[in-house]
Image (cartoon, helix red, strand yellow):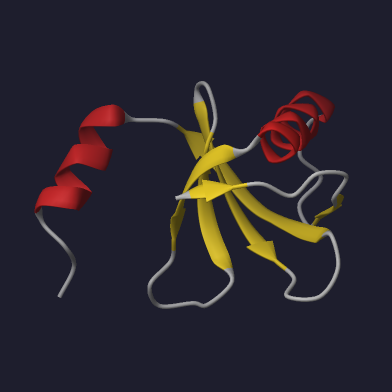
Length: 86
């Protein structure tokens, strides 16, 4: 899925680095590959260059809440696709 939120206001809950916020802003402006969280409506994993951003997209208005960031691990991503959680 392609997630695009141009000119979104990013609310940072955990004081992430300015570089991480800038990369997320750029990804949202251009459109980024995102995987919806099947258990939580409105939550997405946004794929960055070397990091994954866990965000909540507000249903009304251009606002995104950044909840977490972790390193992009392609092997773990393949395993999660092959073996869904129970």
